[in-house]
Length: 238
Image 1: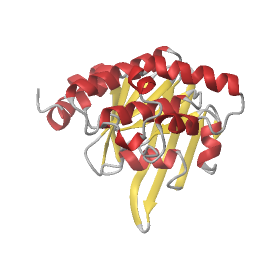
Image 2 (image 1 turned 30 degrees about the horizontal axis):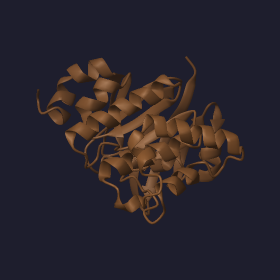
Image 3 (image 1 turned 180 degrees about the vertical axis):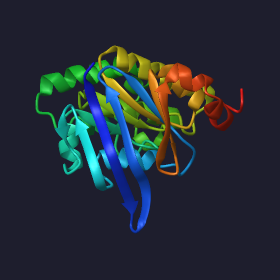
């Protein structure tokens, strides 16, 4: 199984404060891999560092065998790696259709973009009904679907998702995770940052646990679900 994403000994800082300490992880082609941790553990910083929004002070980041730690975010997206950011970060004043078109900004084939737009509308029927609506007037769940659809419009080989279930009702959380499974079934590799450990581990193949900027556990998702440390910290001891 080939490795799509690899981080090796990554250190990252905000000013003088070190946030990530020698982070190493990998995601293989076709996998769903989750990164679990409490608030301020370093999950979002890990995502930002992968995409060059925070620059690693030390270490190496590879996507599909190519070093990307010094690339610009736009170049990383063009290579086939795309981010669904925390809190969705849609273009609130633009229409739903315009948001989706922005996801395809790096592409030039109008026919392929049109075909992918149809495909996104099949995955997210609610989005299809709201193409002319101003995106900021949609519900939180609909905005999350839009953020995922926008990512798919770049035709990625791998998607990184940062807290896709944040702020959603339990029913919408299930919908989001079902969609993640569907996206993986279409050949897209998934790296998922989540606080909802039970849902994430129920979906993922493997997982990592981060605490205060350090990877403290890594295993198959099934084993992490049975791990006493994980159960006490993230599953309420269940």
